[in-house]
Length: 101
Image 1 (cartoon, helix red, strand yellow):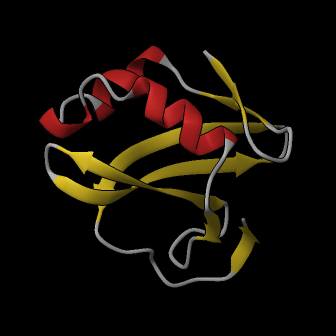
Image 2 (cartoon, rainbow, N blue to C red):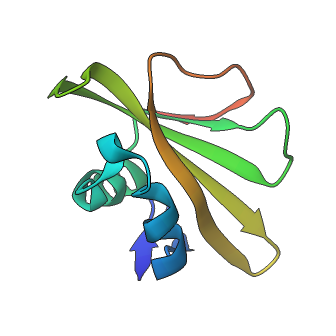
């Protein structure tokens, strides 16, 4: 499936990556939140450990695991962008801020 981010970039989310993400019980049934976070993040941070990765964050309240940020890790190659993983977290990682709402 292709997602469109806040800047109009096409980002691939493969069935294999969805299966990987949903191995974590708290991430099951979160595809809508993944789409929403990519399209309308609160902040996008450049990964400090991978120059090609961007971390898209959006805060969600009232989750079964409490109030958390959803982080979507997207790898940007020359002519391709794709989701690596997604997870809930308490905080935003440090790094260069590429975009902020």
